[in-house]
Image (cartoon, rainbow, N blue to C red):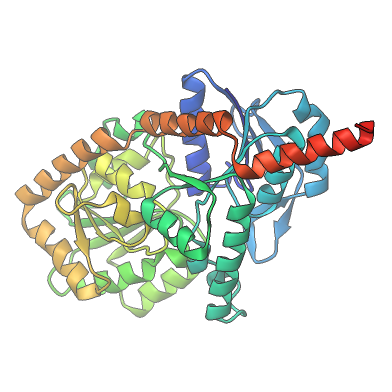
Length: 406
């Protein structure tokens, strides 16, 4: 099969969508399929670009990390794309990529699938703060409904996320297919060496958050929770690995709470080098985001045998199973801190929970399994074209007949 991905983000821009795309592409290529990606040109080349079609892009004033592709310049590639013989178009983001992918699919007479990676209802107001929160939520719901119903099929990374979309009024064909873990997530690592590198004592209780340092990730909750926990564990350390727009705000909060000695911001870690060691070095992985469509970092932590304490809401609720590598906490800093402290006080229980975590992820969450499910979904759409695509085919046939005078 020959597949065209379209996305407003990809490496070197680091986020969950980029990781998901790379994971599916690598697995599909390993299974003998051809995948091309249309993505913004960031002016920085990355490795193995042959399968990527970079489009000139402009910066976004409220989010300088991202860029938007120039729609007109992307459409100039249409003659080239016609020659490729694609079987399906798969859109991964709802900005320029959505409209471009839909246009290309219709021009090429192909099914158009879109993955709903980001819960915009709980995201938009953080980046457009001058819009009232209720209005921003309403806008996100309306736009999401319209965009999802415009494509032939939707992929949701979790059942709770699909349930939300159905609540919006999304009616198109759908499938729940999460991003799985690559083999490197299970590779052995050296947690002690990681602690030594960052000056963390071997016996110091270490909590870990990995991910984008963004407002919607609710990292401020983890700082407040740590502030509660130090009453029982004054030496506890919260390590935050990642980068993003909320860094300055969190540094300020840490200072205001007097947590300078209990929190360490270490920036972005390479997935293929230091990240596994970071997960392994931690005693407990902590996560409080309530807007995840999936929560891939939870699986990555569990793949290294690190137990998780997290709020189970939206996408994370489809991953977390109480006792299977995780303890589920309420949206309450005191209760969350109590569960973390319980694991710190009971190393045998903590190690057993970590053992179960790794077994659980290996059994259900590998990247190959999820890629095979995605390919099967593509095949279904090819065999049974959705109503939207059939309507386009009928319209084109009618137009052709009229032009021929038939």
